[in-house]
Length: 189
Image (cartoon, rainbow, N blue to C red; front, side, top):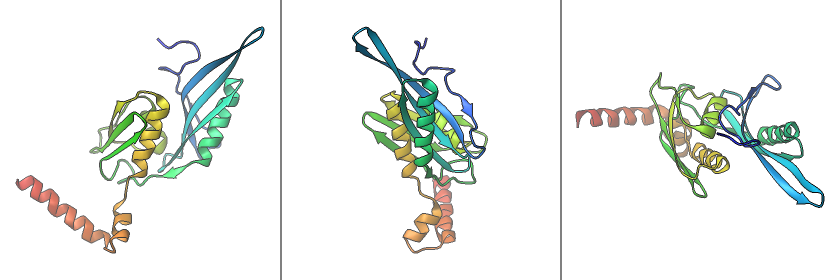
């Protein structure tokens, strides 16, 4: 059961601010500063923003009121967008690992119709990114901040065949044909 002020199940909200981006509230943390005469409460919000077409970002905002913290986090997320290459607009090109601190994640490409098999903050990232088929596993820290940073680390390592071909001075068709050959060898073995 989530305590008051903490992000738990049912805390994620889909909001469509300016039509272009979808943002998801991942976590709210309530902090208290003890002063003479009582406590002063503040709120920290963690928000993921994406255009559901391959761009996604996350932001952190702190304020004395929840709506203001969410607004600050959303603005920070829009300033920190990254582009992630998607295969067929629905999944990853290859499996990737990411880590941040004690948080580790494994992201695996999945066949069509699999859906998003991921928990908590990772699901929010994939939904705002526009990814439809992925299998993800979080190991280590379950802290939402570390999970999101580890997931973004993994997404930053994602390469498209086009970028690999450009780096190796090859044509994409040559890379794809080599991949087809490797897949056929694996089936024969």
